Image (tube, rainbow, N blue to C red; front, side):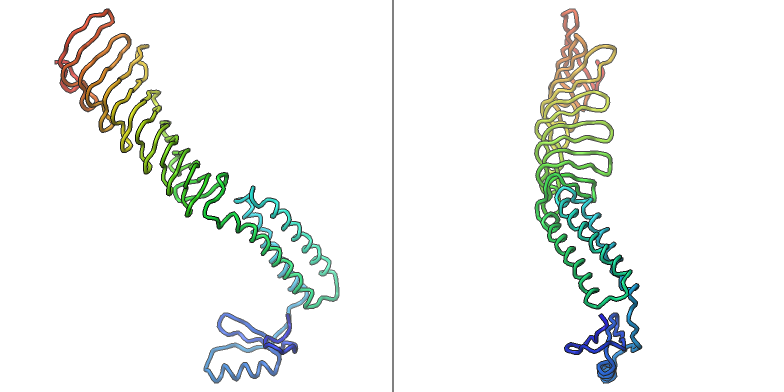
Length: 307
């Protein structure tokens, strides 16, 4: 470590030269040649006497390197615990052995360059072996499904492809919503369950992040819709079970469009029912009203009001 920087020169270093961001050490003769080269090329440099670091400084430097390595191992292990736990234990045990050697050397009056180099090389070798093991799990295109990943939109547990959710997984969004199911290219696609932060829960099909096909949604007011969806809206045929009012069960069976009752349908309120046309969630047109006592009347409604 105190040997001249020049190849094939094993003389003791006595001068140091800072060239840009780099500092090199030279014996007196090589320092003279190095200085002449800088002068001829008009390069900036700082030449000064070289003072070899003390034994304590060298050992402190290696100890800091060791501590940094241990912290890095613990940090990586916390994010990839199941995969590299055994390798982490092995590497940390080796680091502990190196620490013992450093403590023993600090009480010794003799320390050689070879000893310092061996310590540094041992630490480097252990870290190389550790990172080789980590590489298997952090740089694979598809990661194991039980890994947790921090994404811009939230925290995701499951498989990744090109750093995007792909396959089956669970994501907790920063908005408070969550989704459990199938992903393609980072977006919910396929079967899944979506939990809204307001308490709504949807179970069914997704296409490019939107509800589609057949699905069931339980709303936070305890009402429930079972039926067809399109472009994230109730569309097609479906049944909406309302929250019971005054002890009477209430539901609507029929056609939907634009997330509202539109088309032919039947509304049940207790033992009564209304059969007819709806528009924008309101009875509109001819309605057949069936009463509890079995009688019925034909009515005309406009925008939710009986004419």
